[in-house]
Image (cartoon, rainbow, N blue to C red):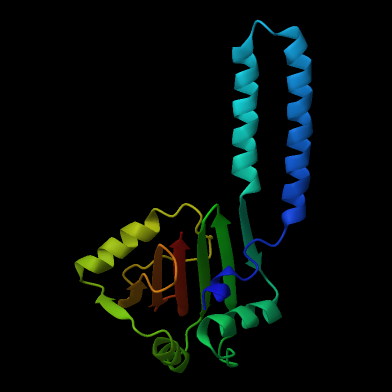
Amino acid sequence: MASAYLENSCGIFSRSFLFTKLVAETRNEIIHKNVGNNITKPKTLRKYLKFLTLIILLTSYSCAYESQNREKLESSFEDNFGFKPPESIKEIKLKNRGYFDFQVHYMSFTYDSNVLEKIIKHDQPLSITENNNVKFGNIIEELDKDTGIPSWFDLPNKNVDRIYYKNDFLDHTFSEYYLWTDKQTEMTYLYVHFFD
């Protein structure tokens, strides 16, 4: 099941490889240029190396994937929920994002009460929190901290009656799952986050 949340999350490694190679070559040029000229200035060399190391870490170990291809979106829907989306699901949106050892999976799709019921049965055990509950507010606060949320992914608000959720359900150090439907947009949203 965890593999469904990882699908296509890190699709382009060649670009990262080329960037890493370019940074390494630049680093080598800086080292060779500065070793001869600045033997008495090791702080300058350390600054360059720290800066280059930071760039490599920030760019090489992250990736994101957002699909517009209906066939891939349907495949991801099926991987997540165990069945193909019916004709009533007119729209599906997906974004997977990963950094170092964590992944975040965002999905939204057209609301259909029968589909939602089937998903809830498939993803058991799920807990439920109602709009007027403290847990509901805590979940919104938690989701609001995520700075990588796509623009199309609407967080729960007054148009959401309940959130289905579960924690620590995957074979990872931490995992969380939130599912809700917005009555105004008539879309159902899935948020899954996990890390090791």
